[in-house]
Image (cartoon, rainbow, N blue to C red; front, side):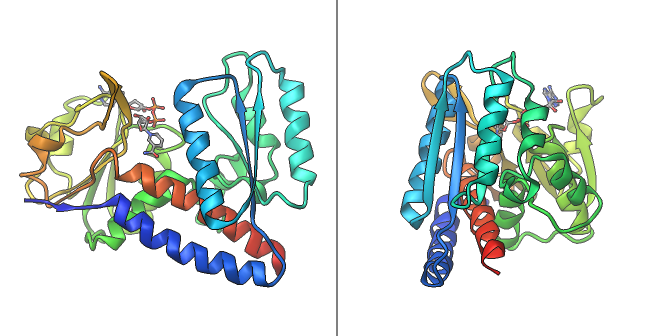
Length: 281
Ligand code: NAD
């Protein structure tokens, strides 16, 4: 039976640490601030934005959520970003993705001042990660590494396989695993014989967006399996891993819900707090 990488418990512990650091900062007269921009009314985005607001409340951050209508123009969005860039109460700016199709996502992200880019999606922060320089690391990949390390999963010299090559999960998590001295294979939709790769993985990260995509026969016995997927099936949230089938084979496994998603929010709060700590120096 696998050890559960329990995002809920790890997040509770991390939030307590962040609460203490926030109090210490506030005692010095600095309140961390996060502003989330939501364009349109995508139902999943609404839930994520609400959860981010709640986490801010829990830690006592200044929080400003700006909801813009679906028909917002690029110029209107960028004017708002400029305003938040200049707002001294705001340490972190997050543009909730995906944006409506008529908007230029990359341009919007580039508009955020890199030090306020708490999602770590700005090309400067992505470039810093890829070239081994300090910068803001994207929340989900950072949360995955935190979860693996806290769970005591050995990384150095191990074979890590990531399924999915997105800019927000697959690619950055591959770099973070590489930095931990894993030998990393990045798989994707055009990978030939995916299972041949995954079966060699000591650490397997699934960021595909397909319900129960990773089956027991794809997993090496004793592997650490991280499930990043958030898929809605018949009103229920399920991951990219067939948990019931894989759990008896794996050495470690993260559940959905209650896994990576919880870590992502914690890391967003930590990135915002760190931006505020830098401001206070
Ligand atoms: P994406 O759609 O941008 O990327 C999916 C990747 O999966 C692609 O790179 C594609 O090549 C790969 N893929 C698709 N079909 C494949 C196949 N048959 N075989 C191998 N690879 C295949 O998705 P994303 O933004 O990286 O998100 C992935 C999943 O993670 C989604 O379910 C998303 O909701 C979830 N997610 C969760 C969190 C969290 O906090 N837990 C954060 C971000 C994303």
